[in-house]
Image (tube, rainbow, N blue to C red; front, side):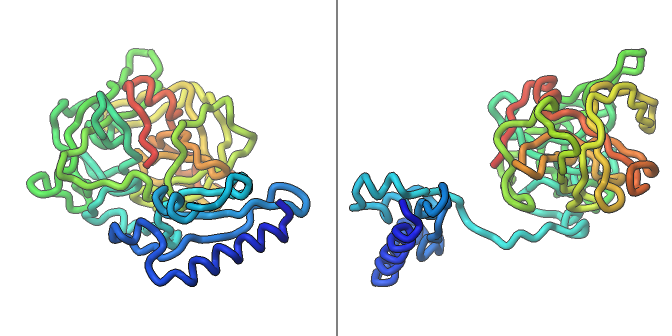
Length: 324
């Protein structure tokens, strides 16, 4: 519709909401305070726009749009966006605390490990699980399936008697026999009583489909939240990197087909950020599982970070990504 008509429709619905003596939205009756929707204009062409309606729940949309004819409904852009929060990034101090519900970026670790990062959530065999590195929650092959996973990790005060949040379920073992590794990854099923919030990230939930390396654009900007450096921004500086030699406590392992990320302002990551999920800024598509890095090099001299392609991680461990 013409932008002026869209403004008139916006004013009409705003007045309707203002006249209502009772809460308009169904969600209020359920206890969530959402007294009215957000109304705006969604441009669709020169001097043309749809009425943009943003609501907390689908029930709100059904109630608000009741009685509008089909011609009007065709000119409405309705989106359920859930609760809206101020977009503040957690600090490293926040991420190292004992925190419930669980969300990506928190300190996590096997009892025999110092601490790493809870990267995200997946389904394994239909069960919800946390995703991180082998060297974070499987103690670099030293753990056994069934071992506890702690939040926070031991280095941040995690105690096996009080802080178990998940049970180690699967991990890809390392090989040092000349065959290159593809992933440093492990999963642990979340204990049933532990609450979690998969979509709690700066900017909101990530996309539902992992990004393939072939779909990257040159110099794509990416982001992550990790236990040590918190929220950082970088750029993809190389892909399909073979022969990445990574020194672990017990051995030197080589990795093929890795993603390299360069920090925009200093280093993109540091020790303890291992396990973080990296996503592309442009569309919030999850891209990689951070596992290693250097302290020097890169454009700003702060080192470079390496990540396993997330599509490879999911394939190797037979996982399904959970966005929110």
